[in-house]
Image (cartoon, rainbow, N blue to C red):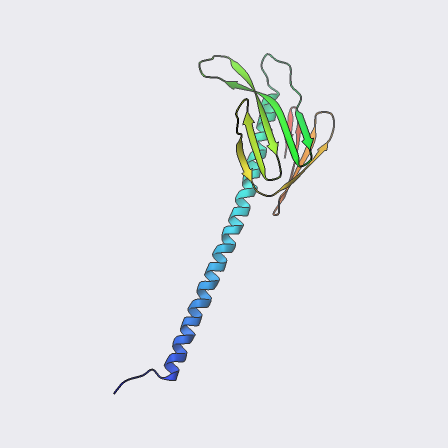
Length: 163
């Protein structure tokens, strides 16, 4: 005699399969949500690190040895912010400081930093953001960066760089 599955056995197996599918679907959706939250937090951290490096460059540009202080050169075009400043560095084989220029570029999709005559700058931040520049006086600027998750503002000025 051939043994067949009863209707109750089939319904129980369908119930177990449906529970497994629901649980695995929830796990996948939570993993995707967790990944997007992690990417958003890492993007905010990247922007904060870029701001700290920019403020360090501004502070260093005010300590030029043997040269008069250089004002911050900020060019604000439509959807493009370029900050050019001079900085002290040690060069290989030299005892004294040498002066290089550093160019920061904010373009809405990237924040990049180029040193002297490099052809391609180092992209520090990639993502979607907007920025706004407000001139406080001749050499002090308030820069606001708006990201989908957070809004950051900081002040750049010779001798002062504040978050």
